[in-house]
Length: 140
Image (tube, rainbow, N blue to C red; front, top):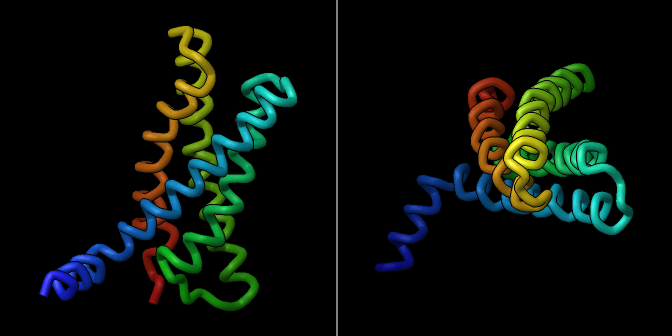
């Protein structure tokens, strides 16, 4: 009985649950890459942030396409267009990420990782809405 209710809830919110799960993994990928470049390799935090962003975008495209939004787009040019739109959306959120990082670190004087975590709240929400409404809207 309880398992049936849980299955129904999962089925009802599957896309959102998977987005949160893979979004969480994408955030971990982003933060780990950022930490490696900024703190371990001592690269400027904005350069490290860009590398982290690029790695996270690549990871997110494949997980969102396959498991979250279950894109049925096929054909080289249609997939390329879908990927282009995905990257374009991530460029917008990446710009927001950079602005938030700059404000947090250089203006408010937060630590790198605290600013990074704060910026990810904006990034995750923006990316879901952009992906759902614009990129993967015709998944079937």
